[in-house]
Structure formats: structure tokens, C-alpha cells
Image (tube, rainbow, N blue to C red):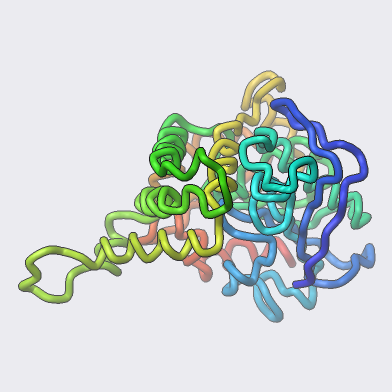
Length: 338
């Protein structure tokens, strides 16, 4: 995938207030330029992923794979607020020469989608053959399908929702509390601030990303005479350390807040009215073991999209099944590309 960026010449006004001038948006494409003929696949990444999709979805994206980077013009934009190049709280504020930290405006899902639209226009793409998004990537995908309904032919929404649930907001707040409990977070002296809080927040998040069965399959104690169980504890600490090496607490805090802004029906007459405007052929996929976005909830709103189809895949790994159950996703999504 080729890394690219655009600089917005005009001030970008945020939905919740505030603006940013000269904002940079980073994105990746499978080919250097769009020729106007190649089928376009647009991938919306999840919370701590980046726009270089083969990094985190290697089973599905690459030469000869489902999203064949030699056959399709694959696009992914780094989310606003994420630390992988697009302007956000960890970017340098030209007015101070220091990171923005909490001076950066609050980010909403609709703000993120507006940056996607800026990239789409910059690339000269008028029609997207297939857009796919999971988790917060699904938030942005369904929001965009409503914002520009005529642009998309097919939309695939995986393990996501049309409005943030109280359950998800509670999880986001618990993770923000973990960041706040680290006394270095609010001091905002450098981008290492809140690092220990970030490790704790990641450990909390993983419990909701996986499932009872998933942990029992991969983190069980192999010694029948173990005095204190430690494998799952070690795994939690390892994953916290791993994220803290590549992410910062300020970007994480902003993205958690952005998730709480998700409400497809805001100023549109409600969620059902918004869903009814989607024109793309839409496939909605739940994961049977997902506790973040339960199948019963997705099954409630999916039929409100005209002509949509709703499917459930099985996994022992809960919400993270969208990253792991490649064969099931290939069987569902492959025919859409043909």
C-alpha cells in the first residue's frame, strides 16, 4: 500500500465546536493513482488500527487475496484523532510548538467521515464499489452511507451499531477513567503522559473484545498444579505494553470520546429514518459471541436498511472475530466483489 497525504487549505470546522487550519489527512492506496476504471474498495479501520490495512488485516488484503491490491483500488484513511499521521491531539500545534493535547477540538464520527469525503474528492472517486467497516470502522461506514448515499454500490457493516449503546459508553468511560487515574495524563508534558493508564485501558478493552471461550482456549493454565493462575494476567499486561509502544493516551482518549458521539439519527428524524435513506446494497454481519455489539441488537436495526441482508458468523473470540474469522468473511464478501 502506498502512503499519501493531503493538507486542507481551509479551516476544518468541527461538529462540536472549534476549528483547525492546515489539517493533514494521511491515507493509503493500493495503487499510486486512481485511473477512473478500476473497482474501488474503501476500508474503514477500527479503533487502534491504521490506514495501512495489510498491517492488521493481512489475511484479507494483499495480492491475490479477497481485497486484491493488484486488482482493486483499495483505499483506507487514517482516522481523525488517531496518531498515525492525520492531525490530532498528539500532532504539533503550530501556535505553541508542542502537541495539541487537550487544546485539540473534540472529534465526532461525522467529523471523521468528512475527512474521508475530502480524500474521496481529492482522488477523483465518484463511485465506491464496496465499502467495509467493523467496530468504529462500521460507525464511520454507516454514517458515510447516509451522508453520501449515491456514492456507494455495496456496503458491508461488521460487528457495529447505528447508535452508541449505554454498554459501550460505560466501557469507554471505564477506559477514560484508567487514563485519568495516571497522574501524568492531565499534566500533558509529553506524549508519554498517561502511558500506564493506557496500558490499563487496553487491558480493560480486551476483556470486551474477546469472550469467555476465547480466553479459556488460549490462556488456560497448562500446569494442573498451578498455585496462582497467571497466563491470562501475563497476556493482559503484554497487550497493554504492546499498545503503549505504538499509540498515545491522548489519541486514545479522543477516539473513545468520538465513539460516544455516534448517533446516526441525530438531526435526521431518528435512526430508522436515517437508515431508510441508504441506497447501497448492504450486508450486515454480526458475530455470535460478540458482547460489545450483540447479534440481537444488530438484528433489530439491520432490516431497516432497504434491501439489506443480515448474517451471523460464529467465533470463539468475540468482537475480535472480525479480525480472525477470515474464511467466513471471504465466503460472504467475495461474491459482492464479483
